[in-house]
Length: 576
Image (cartoon, rainbow, N blue to C red):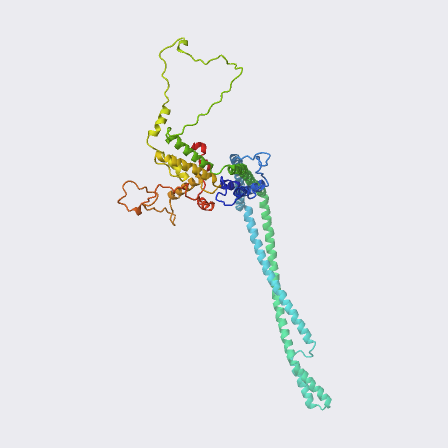
């Protein structure tokens, strides 16, 4: 809770409606009870966080923000001038780049239409032809190698098969079988020899398949040998053509070298131009980076300046908060002292002073001096003075004959008109101004309407004063409470009422409301339609025959009455 809230909510007199015997102590305790306020470090941290201040750079508790020197705002015009200067250098570099590129393109164009270009194109065509021939020869050689590998495999199979055969032809096998069969039929032999003969015949019959396979292998090998020979012939022809193309390429290369020697000076410029182009690109990038550095430097300086501005605003807020805290502390201490001083005063002092004032006013204004009792004359004691230094002196005054020069006649003596009018005031009609009626209504009394009722009113005022002196603090409403209630009621009645949709509601005219004053002849209007109590206050408390309200009953009324500024409450001296 801030000091401002506690100071604004602290009334002049605490616990008016309290019925406890220690009401004054309770009021004092309520004033002293406060939440612990924030420290200066916490206050500075909260303000810095709200203003996005970099606390590691700025100290908002110090007037200079903890800086050795003030951060000045960067000059934007200087930044723009620096960038313009670099841009001018960039334009020069870009012009040099354009000139360099044009020179390179010009040399390329010259080389494209030169004799070296034509000779080089012819050389490239020969090299391309040679490459195609090399690819073709590679295909021939690959095919030759595959055929040689296949032929070697067939020859190996033939060799292994032949080692297992005694007869390698079908005719030879058939002749041998016929010979063995004739021998079997014409020659007598033993059983073992016959078996050996039959076994040989079976072997010969079984070897016919192998002999047929051997014959096919032999035919395949023969055909592949013919193919291999033709492939070798193609390879030899391709080698001869390659030798011819190589010779032509060498001759064309000599032509190209001859033309290059002639155009050597022009061609040597291109590498230098390429190197110059790279240098210009590097310079262009450096200038671009320089512009970027200028912008970054300006932005950094501008950010530092804005950081300082935020820190300065935060310092002003911290300073204002600190001054406000001191002011609130002083105000709280003054409020506390005022409350303590108020508690020391006699309760209802203003009300009793008003009773005295009204009583004195009625007595001095409307009482007949003849009816007033004569004050008893006091005998003055005369003290005889011994050794009087003014003995023999007598009072004198200027006479007419003592004046040296006199012009005109004497002035007429002043007439005391006020005393005469005061004596005649009793004979005048009885009148009371509006303020007197208002004062009587504040006291809850009825003012006199004729001279005969002045004495009774004076007695009521004295009794009312005595009644106030017997009341405890906060038992009955004070003048301030009554005025607060009237002000709040007036504010509530005059404030525009809003409907649920936020629009002002039109108030209907009502004869019985307090805003309508019944004037003139009201006989034609029903009595229930008029506010017959308009302009009349609550009935006054009679001094005699009426019991004063208890503190609890007075508290109910007092709770409904808001407070007013104590400065609006007139002092007894002002009322007197």
